[in-house]
Length: 103
Image 1: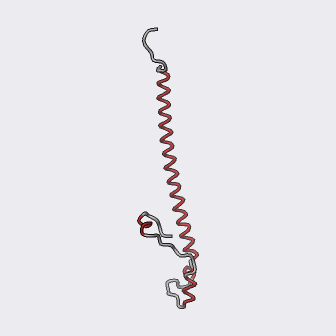
Image 2 (image 1 turned 135 degrees about the vertical axis):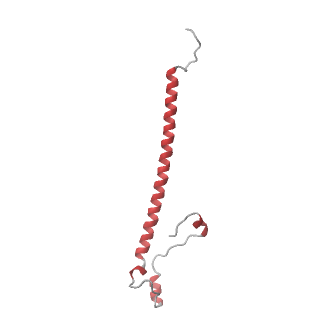
Image 3 (image 1 turned 60 degrees about the vertical axis):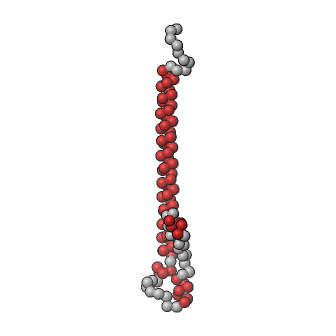
């Protein structure tokens, strides 16, 4: 048997190694795409949750159901009735710089 051959280095093993590395690269790309999709989905759910909460607060606010909500309250009891609903929480300046929204 002429020639010196190293064991395990025939043509079939080299092709299998190439196919295996291509499959691993594909799996890595697919995994990264799945992670990006999951992050975008999480951001979408957070955004929808924020706007749902905001719309509920605005819809249930007592000022929305008054005949003239832009007018100032005439009595102290009317003032207390208007502010009895859920109030929006203003985030700290650090939170606002980080991009946190009001509410």
